[in-house]
Image (cartoon, rainbow, N blue to C red):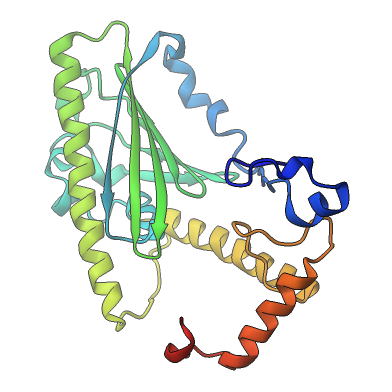
Length: 272
């Protein structure tokens, strides 16, 4: 497979192509394949939502910090005054499904007739979400940029029957929630970075979603480690490695030599 960074390599002898060029490995999971078949989504006129705009921001926190925050509402009474004013938080609940988490938020009686009263947020493992009500829909993607930084990407869709004023108010409301979460997640990450945090028990109801995601991440990480043990090498999905089980002998010899010099450490004098 030729790439933009390696032009004309496709013209090399086939034996060299197999060593130098490689096909990308794309992992596809069907764990959350049924998230869009939830019965509760049947009340929404999906065909009447059309793309309106996208927006994004970068923030200083780990992607799992965002996921933890999204999947519990312990913080809502304090961190989200708009949600606290309109939502019956005493009956807020989540249901863990096959690779996704459905959130159920009933409005307070005085807001039950509003268009945004029937809201259906869904988290999709590992770092995406979709939130929809009768006039407004938006997709969330959390893209890791590093161990403690992310880019939050949003796609907003508008229902055909949504008036301009109503859409503007809803857009402002949703973006305010995302800004509140950005601040909260950044502060949480700052505390985590200090290094004194120790995990404790999770509430079986209020933090059910957090516990579920933790289990998914743990299984994925442990499965990856097991694959490395069986292969006898580190597996870096984003790095150029073996093709069809055949190693790049020269590159592996150089890598082993460098590791032996560093003796598993990081010698500053050899960084050049």
